[in-house]
Image 1 (cartoon, rainbow, N blue to C red):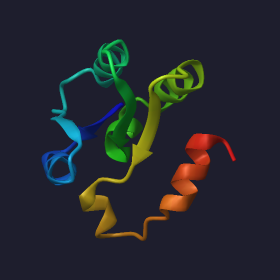
Image 2 (image 1 turned 180 degrees about the vertical axis):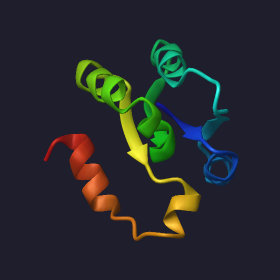
Image 3 (image 1 turned 90 degrees about the horizontal axis):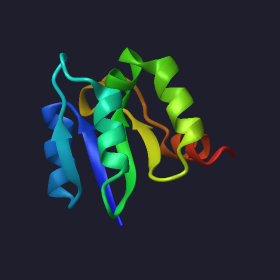
Image 4 (image 1 turned 120 degrees about the horizontal axis):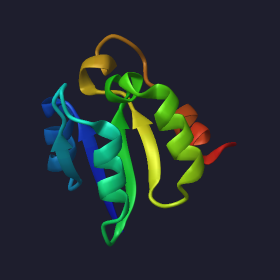
Length: 99
């Protein structure tokens, strides 16, 4: 299974160094269309999307996440957000798993 990161260039390139696939998303790109496009690709098990992108389409993203069982849609903070606030990855994982 593959995991794909969608976000700003710093976050995507950092995750690429860790072995993830990634795509830098510009302000004018349709995030939901990209998610749907990736969801039908063979082998994509998780799509990690930075919070600043999710905030642009929050309501539709939450609906899509509830409907889709595969791939998992995981919201993550961008590296720029991490500099300004503490990130609780356990809380993020619990939210995704519905615990």
